[in-house]
Length: 312
Length: 301
Image (cartoon, rainbow over all chains, first blue to last red; front, side, top):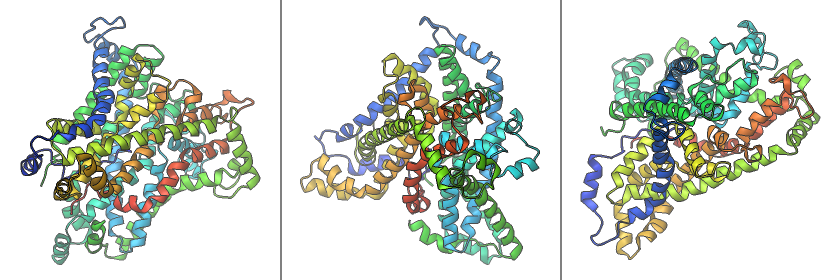
């Protein structure tokens, strides 16, 4: 679960400087800060910086350690499995993100609009609960739900024309299926976060709008949505970056379907194939690097363009 | 928490019965969507594999069938499931302890002390926090492979202990909720820097320690890709990876597996519940604080 709240208080810039001017440490003291961050810095080095550098090194060398230029990247990108994997992940991301933005915002607004406190609290809890079933467990549960023979909603599946598990997991359905699984486990956390953001909108503004005769829908569109903008952008970019790493869903589905779903469906699976089936660690590093660059670019857009970490 | 009380009066309520009906319908449809799979799962583990298919999905099976499923699950490969759960506990708790020992002082130092590398470290934390942890798994594998750590519990525990989100949360908490004057006063009273941290900051930081511990535990327990890549042998699997072994021994999903040690569907359902039970318990106990307080770190006022 990566539910990091964007904060208007992250004071990397101006206030950090102001703070240091105000209460700098006493002269002559050891900078105790270094002691406190030393272990963290060590871990950051070992599991953040070094692996990244090592991946770069491997991606640009060949199996014998010689310089390979962009050969690994060419091999990977021209692999017949690469572009289909890109397409699969992209389709999944499009469906998932649209569903996430529309339904999370809609549900947060509706739950926030409830007058009864108990109803609002219990709904948030119910929506949040599936978050406890993440990873392989949630995929396993959805294998049952999608199998018409055992499914609790087999009637619904048959109504939609699905009579067997294999029919359900046809390639065309997979992006939607993965989006549903991801939405089921992840949406609740975001609804809770959006709800918190809605709570922070000043009462006066809403009161004023109501006196001016705005109805609930108008208030939602003209006031609440614009004020949620940052949080929606934040959710979008975090989910986008995480979604590029699709792995456990297609991996388990591939296993459960006897290969009807290929085991190189997503980019991460392909990287895994390179490393562990073909023993081509350089190729795997090249794919990892491509995924890492995409994730980094997205976070860069998020930090610089989103304005999420700026003070208002 | 204060956000809630101020929020009481700012609610925008839908007027008119048709608007309310539509809103209610949407809310209920999603309740069903989120809840039906879980409720079904609870019923499924009490059934025989025949009853699972023939009977009403939401009917209760029998205690005998539940016991049979339980025995089949824990008898699988001579008690492999027990080993996997023990492994999960070892990895998740080991990483949790290291995460707390590492992150809390680091977040505190970033928030309340001054040193030259403070800002670069903060930016690094921010960037790494935004990178999905999965993105670094293969590079970390390659790194640990070159130092011969693959297959050891440390290959899972150490990477999971690196938890920039925890450092960020601690940083936000300490920089907004602890007045620097308080620390200064303690220093004047003769506290060493270590004592200031241990006697003043840490007791005040109890809520954030709990929050970081919660996120770290849940994330570690549910982690799939990292242990899947790092641990080659079944003896070392955590339960999340162990589930794949159970899945491949389930004839309903893998017909070639029909053999002496095959797993029936209700047993697989039971495995799903067992695999998330610790997280589910933690969830239920911290429900109030999660549903209301999860945004506490990121909201204003």
